[in-house]
View 1 (cartoon, rainbow, N blue to C red):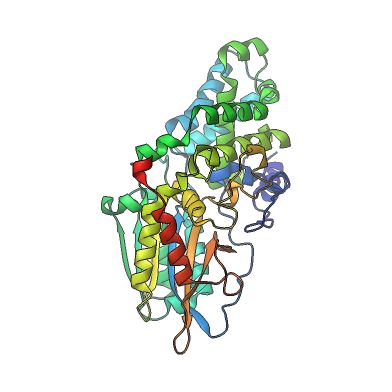
View 2 (cartoon, rainbow, N blue to C red; view 1 turned 60 degrees about the vertical axis):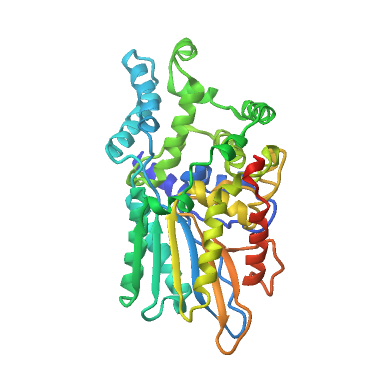
Length: 437
């Protein structure tokens, strides 16, 4: 059994397929079938880059990086994330209502719960490895940015998993170049732009009555857990009267999704609870929910990406200050997926800014959440200057270390003028009027 599970994980979680960033239609069903771990949405363990970078335009070299990255893989945050499913299964077991399979699921859920005891929300070992890897590749891909005694300015939100992600990245960079001058901080002082959660007027706009009704109809179409209940419990009447099947399915799928971030991934899985269609239905619901709450959903005005207006404004101002320096180094920021997701949409990276009115069509339009904000997700803006003489400053954008398009006219390939970038987003930010909410 153990060999089978390890093989399943090897095939399911670590086979990397192409990510269609910047193209339109995405065959999400096929991608999730190829790698079931993609169905985890924001719990998808960071896959790393899948494409080679386009060489810099002739006569140009990179000299500054502006970055925002999510923390790496973590344990689930809430006690309920582990206890909800565990208590339902434990109670059923106490009155002999579990099948043999249900008993084994209880065993595995108990293992996960015990592993996360007093570690909820904390960075896992895999999360630390992810950030060391991202930093290492950043250094190798853009060595000119990090040469000599250059400055690295790093900030994190005040959450420990983000701080530890930052420290792992900085340790890797320092090992690669001991001359780096690194300033790092994590303070409430910067939370107004690093992760501003105090925007009640904007957040209230996420849902309206029509949108709730549309989402409920969509959820009803993709609710699919009857077969699972039959596998777990030996008494249908007990399930009907004592079990909130939808809630149990939700928590078991969350545990299955996040298991890939745990060291237990080497020995157990929970994806065997679900068949291919059930996995896809669970993901479809999550994909639509993230589109509404953090994406450019036109049914609620498409305003939610503007939650990151403070961060984008800071990125523009800090870049303007750094780009006049001869060797500015890098500005690194570490936070959360609830920032990476809307910032990607605000920047209209690749397909992230797509306006879609039919949730079923999100994959066909290329809007799939696991390509945007896996654990360790990051946005890197890479700036280039002429090696000799004067000339336009150019830049490109990377989402999860893959080049993505911007809503601008490129100079060549994925390279754009910094002045075009700055002007476009300065004007876009000016269109948001909080008093109109």
